[in-house]
Image (cartoon, rainbow, N blue to C red; front, side):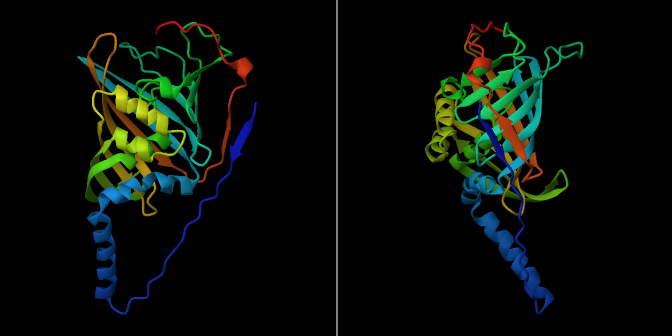
Length: 275
């Protein structure tokens, strides 16, 4: 079993402008803001690259699914290394109608082309991992794991078709710029980094539509602080359209990340029961 570890320190580059008059300072700030608003599509298409520069972060996820009159929410929390494309999330399955948890939290390891799950249940021994090839999933693991891979969330923005800049606001105490738009899964797959390209291509074929509406919030360094995608796919068994809202919150950039992928002997090879 190979151990992969990434320790990334954040760096902030400060620029200083000497203003000879109050009107000059105000004009410079307005011009910069106008530039961000003028080309939001290009700004968002570069957001994934900015995360790679950031190195790593902590992440919180929330996935809301609705079909018919049923709505469930799955939450997760963990860390992600954007350079190595490795992450670890603790995912809490939804509660039952009485308010009790239906399953124990699932540990998920995110890796290029693969999802590893522990405490998966459904007949899997407690000490074993389940490995899933994300390119074989009809949703590319944008939905299956109960949390969208943080890097894949960002890479999806490479397929931005339309976007509008909605102004400045705050997310978890950070000053951010709010954008709303629509991305295309097929276009995102063409421009995505190796490791997420196949997953996005699979989702482009498996979802009800390749168009993905989103809201995203970028800080002054261009890093994604919050992103919310709205997916739509058809349930294979019931042929019912399922609406999914996936939200990812990113913070503590540069945090140390230590993700160890399981050895082959620790991966379950048996049949997994339906849940």
